[in-house]
Image 1: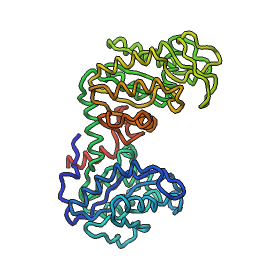
Image 2 (image 1 turned 90 degrees about the horizontal axis):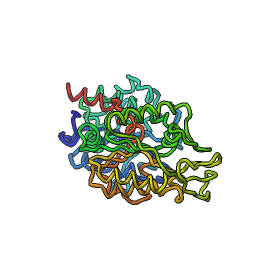
Image 3 (image 1 turned 30 degrees about the vertical axis):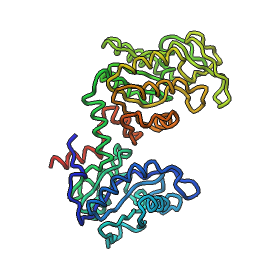
Image 4 (image 1 turned 135 degrees about the vertical axis):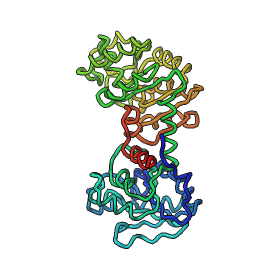
Length: 394
């Protein structure tokens, strides 16, 4: 993908406005998980090293536009950044006032929540122009919001004197391009999650691109039902059984397959203390709930992963939060970790599994974007990336 990269620009003495994804969970007014802030740190440090006057902006939560709400203030993020950078990070509440905020070379200023501004979500043109006037260079570095056309992600990039991709966004695009545009074969994709409907486009798009598609979670349950097996009280979507049949037939016609589990792990109720029972897929009872793939199915999938050239992972294959229903996801995680393939993992639940099984260092690239990662897998153009490409093309 051809975009201007911040790393290649001379930023000395320039007002650089960086859109980052600092939307972190807060607990009692402090940052509860700083993963996203830590991921943004190299970009800030690079801008400082290049002599920039650094301004940061992000959304936090879902406040009502046009209203200041203390609950959604970026103040805890400013405090967290101050500690990490070992220099003051000033929070500017009225950053869109007529007199633009003063910022010196080597200074870092954090703008208050972009969603406090009316027109942010609707990509208001006047708001975008106003933001663009604040800077010499706009840096889009929030891959997690790149699928949204909003004033601070898309509109501003139309009007800023220079619009470029930050290191985090550039790395995401490079990794995703490597995984999907020109992958080492075989390309294997794992798509888990509760519903086929939410990932139908991903399944359809990937089934055309991959050599092997693996499904898990509630999605796998619908494929099991499509094969005529009883899924008891399991989460599945009866109205998408025909779709699953078509997807599997299409995969087989190409010489691949979408393997359906031959054994499963069931429980009678969804709870941390639910008793787990491994059964053949044709032995599921009416009051059973399928919460994981069985050990035989997990080992078959692990074998497929061992021979992969590229692995794309989005979603666990079972209710891994409960240990008795986590063995399938664990085996797949370990197979990916041990594989020589280029691997990319994305999505909140996937990252939680990566953390739980301590394989972070063994995944080639971990994507920071949930919705954006999914939309990229669906083959959709991400608006905030598309505008950067247009600006680069002149």
